[in-house]
Image 1 (cartoon, rainbow, N blue to C red):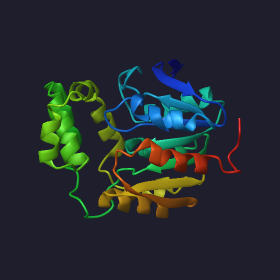
Image 2: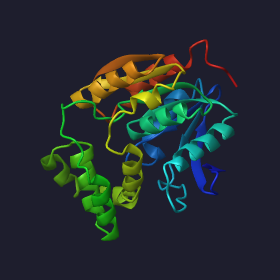
Image 3: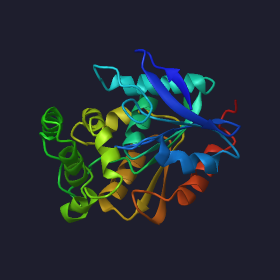
Image 4: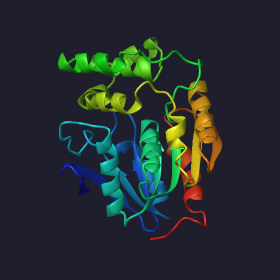
Length: 264
């Protein structure tokens, strides 16, 4: 494990594997960099892969007060560690961070996003208008399990009968440790609408991927593609939101290895 120091002094932990052009991986939701380890290892033969814990996750710090800008400052610190520019892959909410970072002009050379969770139509219920408030109140009451259940049922749109047994699973306590970061994510996503005019500023080559198994996420992927000036869309048919690393790594490698990607 290595660390970089973000603008506000927060330590951001990351693993670096492989050699070649720099690629940075951004995870989403209540997870740590471990969820992207397999993708990093599959890309390592051709790329120098930086797989990091977002602030408040895993081994990274979480200096208060949190603001959304901190996410982009953290990514900027990783880009500096990677040599000053990098391709970026963001999965789920990490895809939103990647898009917003590119719109802000960070030195991203190519971008891939997997199923960024924007709500673009009525193919699913909207997230409650007081979602952030509910999370904040649950955190104040130290009801972290309820925070996770709220996230999975109302933001991720999973059926309650699927989520309830998860509370008895061995990985649930580790997710409860990460529950405070759901407040961060809610601040980032707002009402989950697609900021079409803002992300239209992303002019770098972008690949938007989905698995074709979750209609509202597939619809979001197509809407993101349509909003970007230099984007292409691809479906990895049959893949769930928790995409198989072996299915997505070849698509990432192919796109990031294109001739017009600057090499370090």
